[in-house]
Image (cartoon, rainbow, N blue to C red; front, side, top):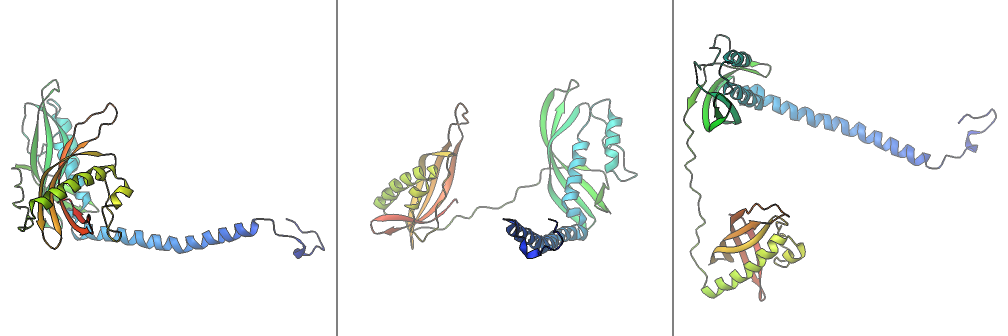
Length: 300
């Protein structure tokens, strides 16, 4: 507003809301001044950490994995009569001097790929590694009809050439499927079984519990735990309780129930998947007066 000559500035009233708007604007500016450096500091440090890993061992980076997966997808893409096209596609991946077909001499089928993923990495040095890749390879006839699908494992030697770039440093080769880990799940050692009447009582109790468990109703579920215990989260709208297939009760410091419980997927309108699942549960219970209360529950 323009003030006329002779007018005293204090004679003008502040427009309603202007003072609040000024306070709000200055508040936002202050927050931005403080927050932007903090955000920049966080992003800068997060980026620096990621770069540190890549600089320390580039062949272990996600960039290296993506490079190899792209290479394998190209390696298993072939149409008879278009070998030159495949060679051109492979060229950006291969170190100079390597065979332009990466070892493939001839094949009497068309190939294409489905899912491709790095299975394991054998680091030779920070800049060299052999990546074993699993690929779904579709074998097609000349009309491009799928004849079969194989899962193949290809070992791909790679080398970092700096600036986040990689090359296939030697001819890739087939390997057998890596062995599965020889690890056996350890079962909890429980031996002091409860009597048959307690087992029957808890089985009846848990049948009711699992019916409420799949409903996900927080009010119903809260009735199964003490007020100072962790609340149980149900599985609302996903599954229906079918039955308790197996149940054993052990008398430890608390009652421990080992159960296998069967569920089925809920029908959604006309869509029916008929999925049936069995989950193992370990449940700890103790009595509060005449009522059993759940004090712990794990899926294991």
